[in-house]
Each structure stands twice: as structure tokens, then as C-alpha cells.
Length: 126
Image (cartoon, rainbow, N blue to C red; front, side, top):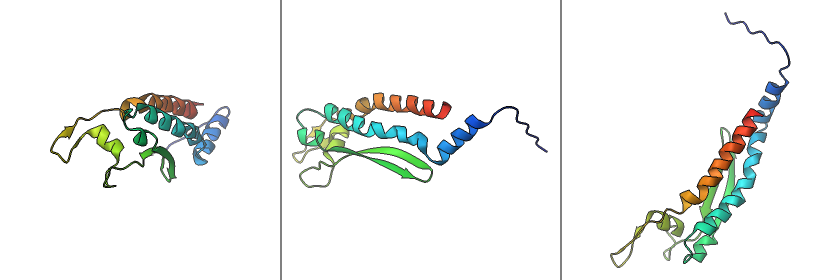
């Protein structure tokens, strides 16, 4: 048998559980979408202005999941491959050459991820 005794107020626990139920703690994430778009646009290699200007984000909220997704709508000439991905991971050319990868997405978003983690920790522990 388990016995639980509570002394004092449970208000902070109830407040936390109500915020969780209403998903209020995730609203703090909404400010990071535009910040990520700006960071990605500035980090995109300068000779790819169309790619830099094609960043956008979506806030995704479904049961058990809440997140920010960043996307880039600029595609290659065939319309099949996102240019941002080609730049990030490198790619072969039609002439048989290879364009070296440039890791620009991860460094651009790392400070934002760090701030999200800090802000979410504050939300959970308040």
C-alpha cells in the first residue's frame, strides 16, 4: 500500500499541471520561428540569395508533440531538390564534379536551440 500525505499548498503543482494541460509552456517557442528564419537567411552562402530569401517556419502542435520546423522553398532547376539541402550536404554536378558541403544550418541554429532549452527549462521550473 502507498500512502501520500501533503502538507502545505499544492498551488504551484496545480499551476504547473494546468499550464501543461493547456500547453501554455510551449507558447514561449513562438518567438523563435522568426529568429531562426533570420539566422538561416544570414548564414546562407551569399551567392545564393534566392535560397537565403526562401526560409520560412511552421509551428507544429499535435498530441504529444510541439515543435518548430524550418523549411526552405527554393528548389534546384529541376524543382526536385531543395537548394538549402544541396548546400548543406554537398552534391554532384551534371558535369561529373562535386560541390563541397557547407555546414551553415547547424551553426546558425545552435544559439537558438540553446536559448530554447534555457527558456523551456525556466517554463518547466517556474
